[in-house]
Image (cartoon, rainbow, N blue to C red; front, side):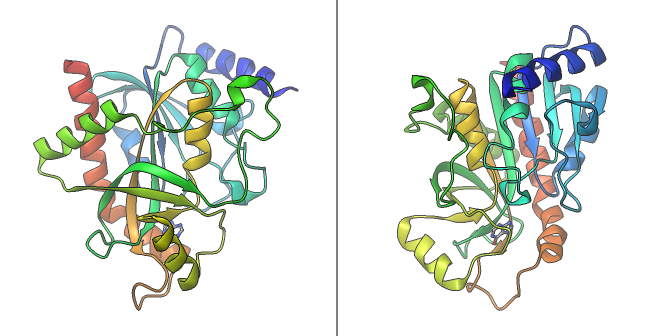
Length: 273
Ligand code: HPA
């Protein structure tokens, strides 16, 4: 099966489950923020196991279903959980899901993730709007693509107008929304303190193991992108606390409520707008 056959089959499967629905916005819900999908009205949920080319995350607490319906008055398709490069499927593991959302009608992709912060003023429970990224993984999701479209310009990867709207929504809701550069490490280990010092010198404000490949894949197929980090910890070496998956998962709930309000408010503004 070619990659694009998978997209075609995925679209057919989803369209059969919710005929006539044309989502405008795709959301990728990372750790802790999955419950946002429970707020989707008139929801139709499909397990990734039912959708061709949608890899099931192997990480505890990362979910694995696509929820379609209305959120804040906007037709959306929410991916509750995503697969990661470090799970071993390759850097293009999210290619079919991203291209399927685009083929369903989503012009906008909003990504969320859990991340470690290099900014002590943006500690656990904070939200950071990603303004730009550094791909530090040594890999790339478009390797093997053909055609000149593969030479994607990433000068404006994080859509300025969407960022403005998210900042305005945060302001309206009285939420603090930090802004910063996200650096993609492949994982699955957490970084060393020396890597975090290097990340800081290179210009990173937050680090994590996802999002950058999805952003590149989405820009490749022409979607407008915004991404927000739910900060679960200070990055390695910046606090006394030992990093663990369990600890980051436990802290993911802390920022999730604000992130839920922010995204719902953003969609409500869009519906009004
Ligand atoms: N590093 C990488 N990924 C993460 C972190 C971190 O500190 N916290 C949550 N996801």
